[in-house]
Image (tube, rainbow, N blue to C red):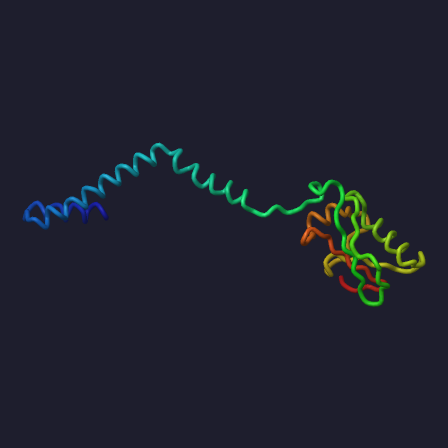
Length: 161
């Protein structure tokens, strides 16, 4: 379509040569030259195909680094918050090894707040769900940590989920 309109313009210009026609031909010629230059660049191929790949690599490099359990040197920061009528712990932030399980946290909190073995203790991740007792804290940290901390809520009664 585009070439037909250019051909018509060129035919009309060749029939009636004027100064304005000569001026109009020069932009058409430069456009044709640019088109040929673009075709040559596309045929080379490597120039344009690597540009998106480089942009993608630069975007990955610019992303803020997210702390992971593996990158933290084997320890993660856990924030324990009480829910409902659960006793409040004096110290809320704890540095815990990544290979520890949720069952270990449950036993630790029970000891710290001096609960009976028969009393129930529920642990929740981000006020959302109760993880299984065999789940590792490192995995929970990798998936649900915010601001470099894993927030766990504990309760003596069932609160969420």
